[in-house]
Image (cartoon, rainbow, N blue to C red; front, side):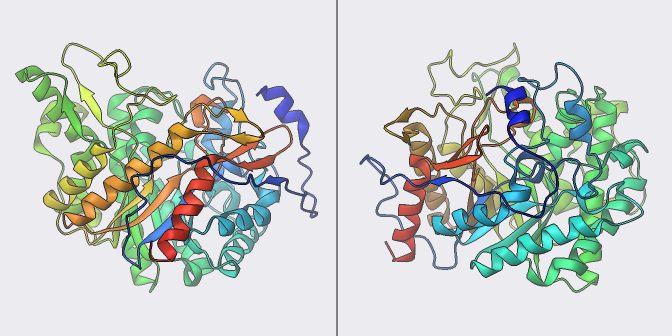
Length: 476
């Protein structure tokens, strides 16, 4: 899609009238082999779909919303693949009611969404924005009216630019602002939320945003990024403490992007590289959360880039949580000599270039349960893929995505059968959306979005997921 056409196609006037949503419901998916056909899951297992605010809401400058770091980042030339932005995205801010109808009609139990911090507190400190809070009031009440559990994420990367101007996540003061924000959300909505996630993928926010600089805010400084990661973890722990002291009834957790690290060969160099990268991606976050310390091998590798840690910080981070959210897309293969290319190795890959590797999800869940048995429940909070979406006879026949979901759901069942306490599975994503630095070029949705008209069309993957959930609710 053309960014200019997208921007021009829809109004952003803040009117109260909700535009008509055009939703296409194709008849049925064509038959195909399904490894989940005979599988059943526990009756209390939660099935859902996931989105995030910046990727779908639009309304970037409406009703008192302040700018986020992603709004500012998108203004920089060359950082977004198609030069687009989140100004309109999926126009969910206006179309939320019809989108909730769509979610309900899929037959899921839960909707995982995120709250845009600068929409409810434009600067990230100081005054609150009642119109922004009212939007989430309507959204959450709308979920409950449709029988959907509301699962809120407080930080899905869209930090208020007002806080970035004061140092962002590198500044220790942002930790205190985040706790105040968490408490406001609890006081306003906590009685209706099934769960509250503090942060989505702190590794991405820290490393892609502050080390590689390919995500907002676009900083390229490893030591800076490591300090950011510490403050994200610290703000998580302090927010959990504050929410519990406030008497929250919502389940509390954090979401990490995780992947098994495999050496490309049996060489000692490749094995050492895989071990260190496992420390940077997984143990750097799970060890503090569960054990109250950073992994020694990663600290040694960082040297003088290690974070400044104040007395009491690690105790604050190590707070009991009700679940760990796991976002899984693929494994990672590490080579000491350079980059391992799954496509060149003959592996199936998604449009992101990520290997399709369902067995890695089973392996990851089993490893987490073995190494961190204090975690009471593991939730798959994101799983999905970007694939070509061919239109055939008015339907989006995304067979590769259907297979991806089937094989990964089957991998979750294997983990459960081995004794891993997995409590939820949520597809990423409900609908095509702004895919960060990829703009609108990559589509993860099980619902297709025509950005020029905002028409939603259920892909074959959505039709399959709906049929699968019907079988689960009927006891397969």
